[in-house]
Length: 300
Image (tube, rainbow, N blue to C red; front, top):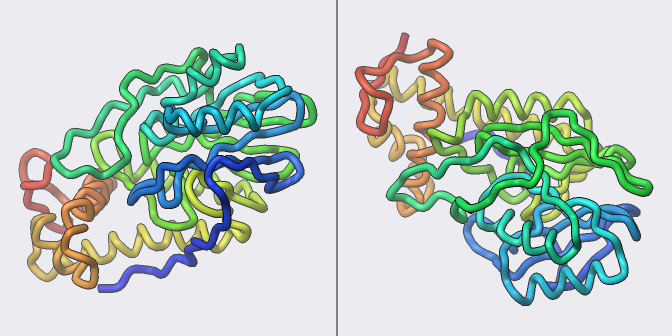
């Protein structure tokens, strides 16, 4: 079974630790933490000039911290914003804020770790707490720039994207990534909430999306539509598996991911489980007993 093709964008030229002006109001510094969940590394965004804010400071690595200090030398950091509390996004937030003398803002919804024997993410920053909690629609303003907080639960329950109104662009964290689909792993990850959040972003008609990992998405409308269609196509595949007699997640994954490296099947099973939870919620399928990896499912 083949899923909907997403027009991924993966070409990116950069040097680790070097600040780069990527738009009139946006600079980026990429941390040297490449990996299977971070692609080339965490892209830290600096918004404005002189009076600035920083989005997703990234991992607490000495060289990376020094690179950010050099990039911000002579400027006033008014806020540090965090999309969600994973180890590749939030650990440097408070050290940077203490150095700059400002506060850390993020969703007040704390992300609880997903218990799993399969590592699906860069890991949870369990110590992270914002100084102030943001609500959906909160505006953060500086000299020449305005950031709007947009609640986008799904990847995590407390995921927050940020819109730069002056450039009609979105800093999407891990909600939308140009290089890959994002991980949705229950119970904190919620596929139904994720699809709703995708629709919420689609109707805003942003001209550019800046993910924390990888290059910008410069044609967002068809990209976000394909992102959504890919997820819905997976659900059609699940329904087809159930119709053909595959009743458990472990039986569906080899069918749905036959062309994918088998080492990735354990992680794929969590994505399928997120879909199963959503399909049960909306009444498309039923579950015998507790909703977990060992459960049997049937069509309704």
